[in-house]
Image (cartoon, rainbow, N blue to C red; front, side):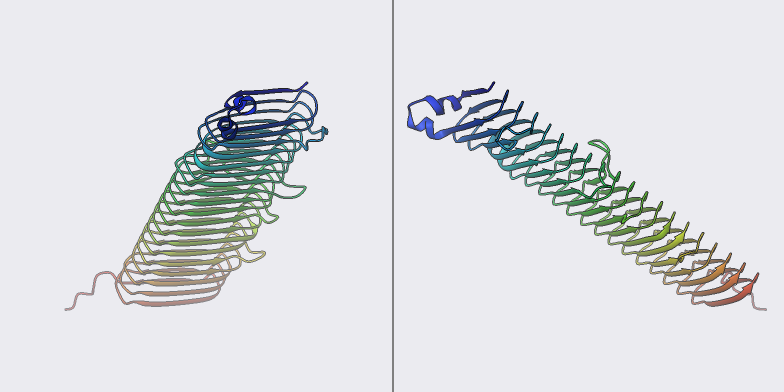
Length: 468
């Protein structure tokens, strides 16, 4: 049984004899199959609605009010095939355009638009997919393509000029986009092969001119859970965020409250269970996190301006890297290989440089800690072997330190609080210990220890000697 309801200006467009009414509203409904139902309600001029349904038990409801609204609903392939139980609802006002195409079973699509020059395009070729679009304001673009099964996509866009693209070609994925600012761009792609799907991504852009990209190709990855637990939050302006997750069980969180920041998170390949958190409250910061292997954690907090942080954690895994940059124009680079490496960097001052390179395939349990509370400091830590510890605390200005350790169980501590000091520590062997303190200015210390069980303490500075 077929049901077609044409009300308001749509009915007048079909049956009234006045030429003006016939040109101002157009509704075309074509239905093939059993129990298909279409309800079209158009009020105002230039509204156009085309509904084409094939198969069984399909429903389409279109309600348009205002000038220039257009809606096209195409469900199934129009041949009365086994593509069943699709549902489409469109409610729009203004000069907007909506197209819904559903070709498989159990698809649900809902579009609500109110404004000018906005466009919504939904294509569902999988089974049991759901797409919801709500656009208020002008010049929005929403594109949802679902070719996997049991996917869910939700897009809310307000104010003006926002663009959202969601592509889901694997199954059981969830994607949420909320763009309440102006001129934001969001892209979510949840793709992959046989062992992929069940990913979740949630993006909130309340600032202006932001760009967010989330690419998920593995399984059970998260860049946000739902409409309330966000994975990417851009409340500042002119920020860029890219999250790439392969493998499985990856977790990513990005919050950009400042302006002109860049964040890159790349987790996965065939690896699993990494966590990455990036918070950028300052302006003009850059964060780059890359994690391979398994079970690594990276945390970056950039509260100052014009800072750079790079973290690369690879085979095998269980690494930890934490970077806090509270000052301005600092740079931190961390590279970790092997098993259970830990690196901690705190740059409270400005214009500091820190480099940590530790571990190797087969190496384990390195610890590196750098605190740069002064300005224009330089710290370099290189550790190979097992169970090494290197700690640097730089206050003052223009201090430089270098630690290189290879072997097992070596410990090096450097504290610099004066001006323009240089400390170099090289340890090869096992169980060696060095402690260097430079509390005055223009000091130079070089300590080299080879073998086992050596110990050295260097103190430069303090109160000057009292002359007789």
